[in-house]
Image 1 (cartoon, one colour):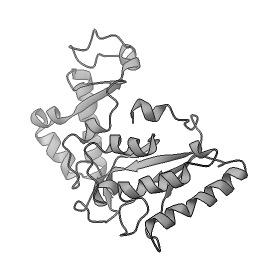
Image 2 (cartoon, rainbow, N blue to C red):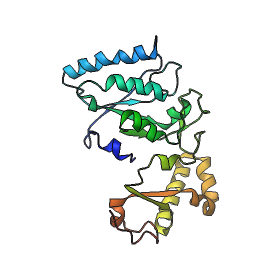
Image 3 (spheres, rainbow, N blue to C red):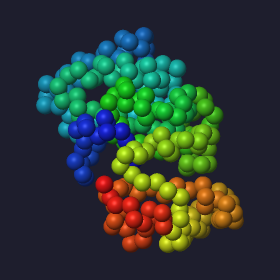
Image 4 (tube, rainbow, N blue to C red):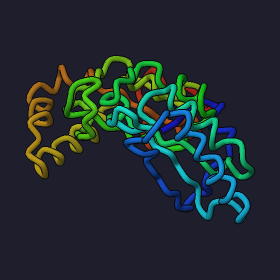
Length: 233
């Protein structure tokens, strides 16, 4: 998933390189500031050993009244503590949408707020939540089947400078989409997929087609008649 240019300027794992995704911890004894400061010597010791063998991605968490990475202010304190030592560019951030919703953090505009703290988003876990906002419950479900507010979320997690978006307007891509949903229904018995297919003429208008700009002229069919002549930038 594309993110802001400010994030992409940071060093990233090479293609095929592994990375470790870790939670910052559900509970902390004592003051949050004290717990965050404890991370500094640990990060420095690792730097003295030559850095991390693989990139370490810290993921926001859903629950815990004293969790280190549930609220944005605590993520900021944690990031301040671990970003000082050398090789700290090997520490990145994983944004989980379910965890944010369950942790009481609004999804709308969240990418910009996270980037203002960390300067980077290396990975996005795009999940819906089975539970209500600020529930603290870490229970994922497929997007569209939970309680996350869908309005504007997709656009918030897109870098519109590097992609084109449009309705599914070409018959080829519409049939591809419908076929994938039909396969999903066959394999899972999804009631949501059944509802979409039963009301296809209306429901298909809710889908957004996304394509990297550099791939537009390589597609076997145009995204839509309107974008058929748009050159890749």
